[in-house]
Image 1: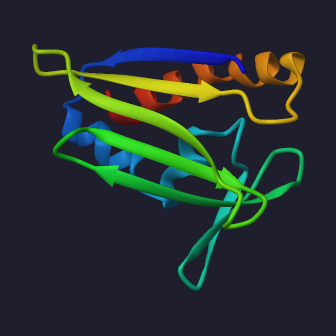
Image 2: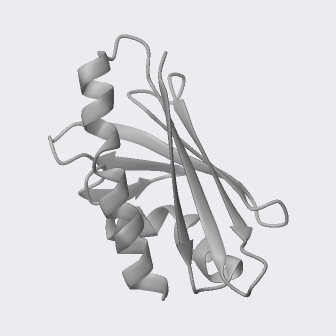
Length: 130
């Protein structure tokens, strides 16, 4: 299993970044390489990926700790966790830390290809908060 962690520093406060990233309805605004659209069906969020796949999506967040765990998968019972954290940079801005964990049955090449667009998405967040 491979792990890839990406970080970005923003001028915006941790609260501002947290509010953007922790709201599932904002996912299609910043995670464009992962989510083309998102819809709510009852209590569930369903995303459509750029390749047309549909995935269940949820967020477990704790603003006090700055933790935003994103979960996605083909069923509600088969969700894969993407842990993230938003912290203060101790100068009024924030740091966003996103960890991508290789899924079972995902090839090393698929995992590596999925990590590349993350840098672009972190810059999209910058355009929305700074």
